[in-house]
Length: 179
Image (cartoon, rainbow, N blue to C red; front, side):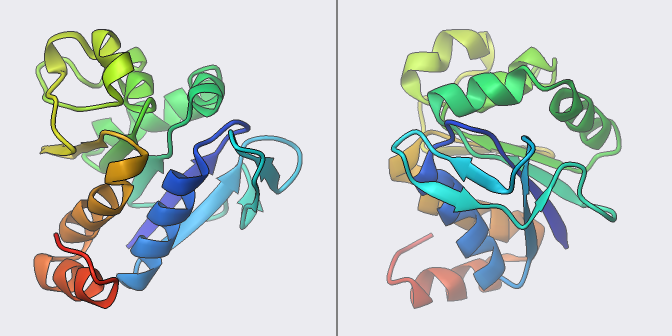
């Protein structure tokens, strides 16, 4: 399993690092990709994350996962490459996931019609009827998470769907948390 994790300036650092780390602990090839001209991506709290590569990443991917963060989400939504990739992955039945404010990018791409999702509560109106006020939601190939505090659970839910539940439980046990 190979997962594309786009990193945009202003991302929520906890979410990006947690997603990449937990996926890799689950044996998943999580590839972080900077959207800008440099691999160094500055987060919302001033932490700089060094992406594995620049967009476009080489090779095929089985899923895409968007970290949130207010400005990071705005930058994801403004990037036509991201929107096109989300639509392509969804049309192909590949996993499409987002956490915090980033599920609003899925809504903007038209992927949440008739589906359930969650997001940071302040962004709930942008999800409309799709919104559920819970930490994580999996609806078919769409997986969403609520925010920084639920980033670990969200990432473990991804491992459950991308690999299997025993692997997710093993990773959770190793991290001294629960699924």
